Image 1 (cartoon, rainbow, N blue to C red):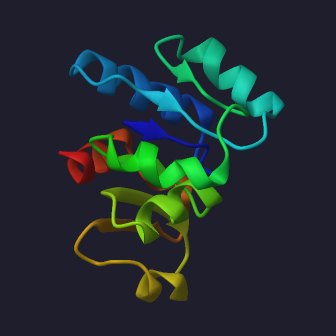
Image 2 (spheres, helix red, strand yellow; image 1 turned 90 degrees about the vertical axis):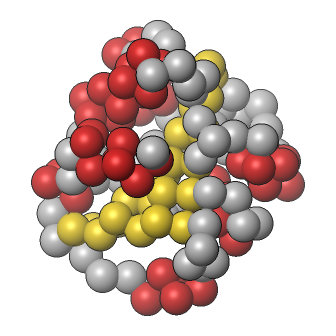
Length: 129
């Protein structure tokens, strides 16, 4: 499973999601184009993550996404490229988003909430299952 940072979703939930996916037998790759302090905090909270942050070009994202069970992210470049390539993608976002109409509906699950902090790890796990 490819995981990218999700703006507004608490880091503790991202870490819990990574650990839960790991327990269920998935290898979980943290993918981001630019390394930030948030990546370092997440890696400390979820050492099960395989960190590829900063070592992958945007052009490689669709290939990596297609090799994964799913890509999970926010409205960032990683999740958007995965979705546009037709790879199975789960995108979390706050509020409504017109971009949902531009992504392939057959392979993209969009979890929208007025408060993204209300989205549970269970909600995301259901979308990945």
